[in-house]
Image 1 (cartoon, rainbow, N blue to C red):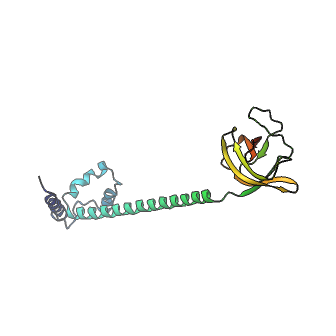
Image 2: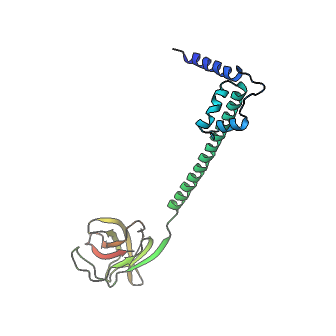
Image 3: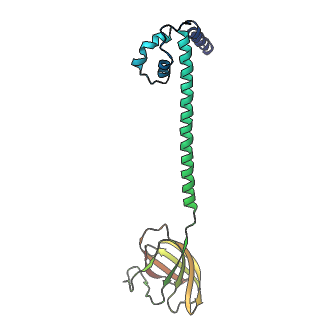
Length: 217
């Protein structure tokens, strides 16, 4: 068995034989550069190129020209593929940049108000609704809530729930008297919630919850 070095030397010897061992200075029977270009670029199929295969193996000038044309064609192919890859990379980078820009762009804050001053609250999940549901848009809200008459100032807990005891959003906020109304200000991002019916739960700390049906649009 030949070693790697011996195989390399054999291939080099065969290449020299084909490139120099069959001189044809008059270029007799040569197909011409156009045919060689077509064969090198594979524009000629195997059947069409077959008549010239034997000639290439017995004409060193055609063999050298074919080898140079083939190398040039392969280099152009590599450059074309590199250009396509670079173009795709630019498109992917631009798409990623736009996606990140969209995903990191702050959601505009919208002012919203809920007036609970004259609304009856649910004290349990099975109680009938005394009023139509409250409504809020699904966005990043700067929310002002006017609590029912008689609500004392202090720290309150606020939740949005599907059913009592299962909050999907919660916070704590201070309730103060503003223009004779017990008023609570809170920031809430509802943009990722699905539209539908929820419950708004409110209580002063260490007291029982009051529930208000809430529709997110």
